[in-house]
Image: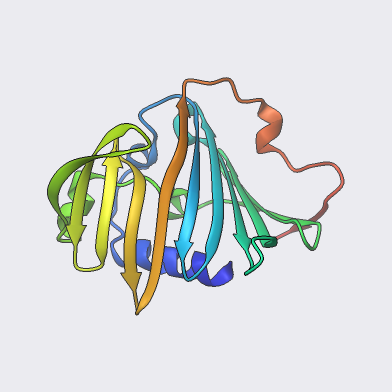
Length: 190
C-alpha cells in the first residue's frame, strides 16, 4: 500500500505546477467514485467528495494473493485539515495543511498539466458507460472526464499501476460524519 501511494505521489509531484486551489476542485458539488486497482498491487479505492472537493474521503484497500485485504488506509481532507487513518493500527493522524499542494486530489487533472506532461489526446472512449477523452504519453494513458481521471494505465520506474472507475455517482448527499474520525480511534497529532 505504501509503495502504491509513494509511486502515485512521485508521479504527480513530477508534474506539479503552481496552480491555484480552484484547480483542485471537482466539477460537481458531491459524488462517489469507486476504482478497481491493478498492476503490481491490486485492490479498490473509494472516493467520496463534497463541497467540490473541500471535503474528500479516500479509502484504499490493498488485497493479498487470496483477495483478502492486507492493508487499508483512509485519508480525509476536511477543508484545512488532513486525517490519515490506519485501520490495522486503529490510529488516526490529524494535521493542519499549510501547503496548498497537500490538498491535491490525485484523480483530478487539467489540460494544461496534461500538455506539460507531453500527453496528447488520442481518442474518445467509454469508461463505466461515460465517454472520456483518452490521453497518452510516455508513461501510459489516462481517460479523463470533467477533469477526473476515470482510468489510467501507467508504468512508472518499470512498475505497472492501473486503475479504473467501476462506479460513479454525482450529486448525492454525503453525511458529514464521512469526513470525521471514528470515535474508537486513537488520535496522534502532528
